[in-house]
Length: 129
Image (cartoon, rainbow, N blue to C red; front, side, top):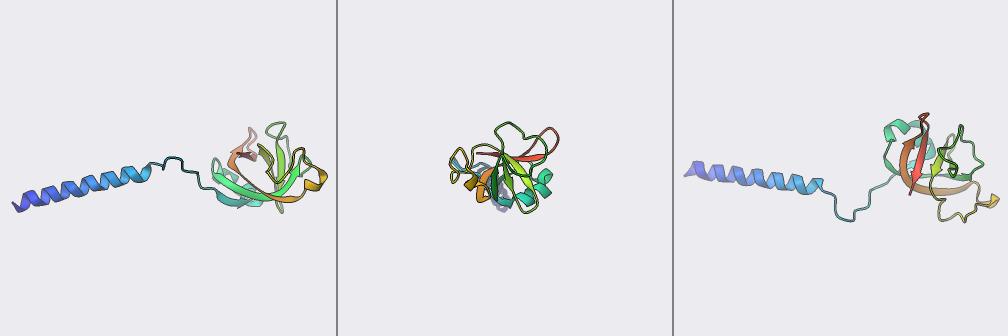
């Protein structure tokens, strides 16, 4: 009798563990991905490790007149500068910037959400939402 109880208890524990593992691995319907906050300089320094990561990145909006080197990933990419680095951003300009950007907008601190990507030459850029 004691052996049957132990077997039933073991089976119940195993089923509970399997059920908990399944429900933990499934995302909640309508869940918004968490964005890790980064600076332009942090992304530039660790871009390979951050590839594909959802981030919120802060820097200075520079439109098409920043210090990024090399060709942009596409013709509409704009520049976001940090203290020592510059990244192209593919996507809409921040809501705080009225298109088309004016000279007054250049240098304004903004935060943009998106995913870190790399162009064919391996240069990082942000694919914004």
